[in-house]
Image (tube, rainbow, N blue to C red; front, side):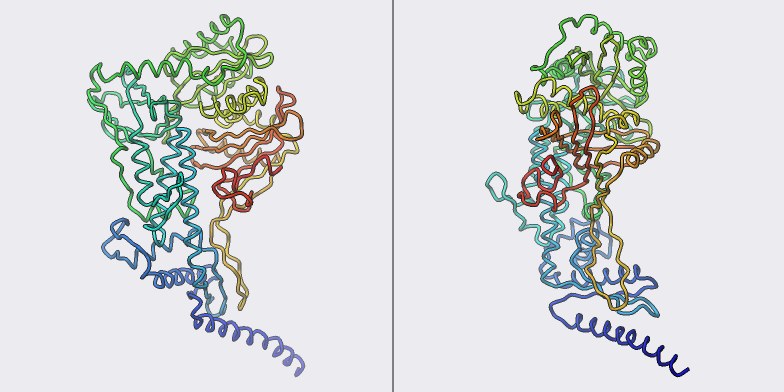
Amino acid sequence: MHKTIWMILMLLLPLTSLAQTAEERAEQMKANAEYICGEGWGDTYNSADQAALADLISKISLNISNSFEIKEEEFNTNSSFDSKTAITSVMNSYAQATLTNTFNLVISNTPQTHVLRYIRKSEVNKIFDERKEKVFDYVRSAMRAEEKAKIDDALRNYYWAFAMVRSLQYPNSVKMTIDGVQRLLVTWIPQQIEEIMSNLSTKIASKDGNEINLFIKYKGEPVTSLDYTYFDGQTWSNLYSAKDGMGIVELRPGVEINSLQLKYEYEYADQCQIDKELESVMQLFKGTSFKNASVYINNLDKKSAVSSEAKKEFEKSVKTESAANLETLSKVENEKELAGIMTRVINAIKAKDYDSVSDCFSEDGLEMYKKLLNYGQARLLGDPQFSFYTMGKRVVCRSIPMAFSFKNNRRKFVEDVTFTFDENKKIECVAFGLGSQAKTDIFNKGVGAWSDYAKMVIATFLENYKTAFALKRLDYLESVFDDNATIITGHIIKKAPKVAMEGESFINSNNKLIKYTRQTKSEYMRKLKMCFQSNQFINIRFADNDVVKMGAGGETYGIQIKQDYYSTNYGDHGYLFLMVDFNDPDNPSIKVRTWQPDRNPNINSNLPRSNRDWGIIGPGNF
């Protein structure tokens, strides 16, 4: 009996000592002037830890309040809002992602869990430095997009950078070297946004009832991509996307308006949810208006509203867009028969008599054609002029501009549709074409380095790949992925807090993390199938295409892509890398597919952060 009691006492003694040690350590940390501490209590570890984090943020806010530059009028406020509240609100936005260098200590687990969160005062500045680097990344992305006239990407990245820079400790001191000049970002970014919008020109190219075709230019050239909304006489429209200069407006039937008001999109508030840190900042600060964001076209009810110049440019874009980047490729000697087939198809689409041209398609081609027409409410833009190019034994007709709209979503798209004929002059494939800039990346860059045939094969593969997502062609995707393909997908996660033992301390990581998951082909296809079933539409756009021939594997190429992904339930932007074996052009095989939602500082870390390959998986990583 005495022996049993003695053993119990021996077991309890370390726990008692450990509890005292935890309390003593907590008191030491709170008394140490080098640290800032926060305490929290709760029925569970998670609730206590969150309470401690909130207390720590409050203490950090108090500690830096005298040195924090704040403008209360910039915040979404209520009657009780003041500068102290503003600073705490800003610091809370850091808790969403970048408050990574804090420690915690479980002081006790009974009767409630008691947690201490603490951080070195010297580490606080690193919190702001990480966000400042994020601002610089947004600015670099905006500048790259502007160079390629991708104005949607440019405006989005500039505006998000502006939102983030206002949340820094010293926003009026943040400078960035741009073209050899130190720019104060808090004033320079709004100037850039206004300047970009001032260089946009939007005119009516044609008007047919309630359908209007727009032609939009940036610095005198067709804009590569741009998003906008318009007032239809009763309310603001969903978001419309212009592509390669071509945009559309669909007025409400029966509503007469004499003036058309458009707004160029720049906030993208519905997309910032992919980054909780950014979302928190966007909700915290008032939106900023820009005078050049609104465009008015008057006398809409008169013929003078239609610009003869815009009409010519629109039709020219429709007729010659596909040929502009393909001048080095072999054309078809006898186009007359194929042009006749395409004329039948175009007329059938115009008349909505789709089944009348079933004989023009192969079995697979007819299925794709029907899926295309069911993809959205499709309509042709202008009167296309067909351009035919050979690809081995096949002939490709590029590109037929069409507009697609959907009943239950908030986006409208313009896409170039490409038709591929087999040896029997049957249309075997229907695909969404690449944008003009993406085609330039493939056809015009590295001229002479690869054959024209290789360029066409790569472009056609990318078109079929992006179309497979839009038309939910799981069978095609299964066929192009090698059975042993390396498939790595990055997901933004919020790391679950570690459940600590009493007296244990560790670095806490509440930040945004990117978890990389390696999947088998069957696992990836199973998830794709679920994605296809849950979305009315999926639309993928490629930008910044960088194609490199791999050092081994013959006709094997690495394709690095900045990808925009839109679906009924979700939208994001990220970086796609594909390593594709084209040794058998009729049966391309994806050997590697990686996807990452953001740049990773651990990838290509030897490169300067300003390098386009910094943080991105590419050919050099395989």
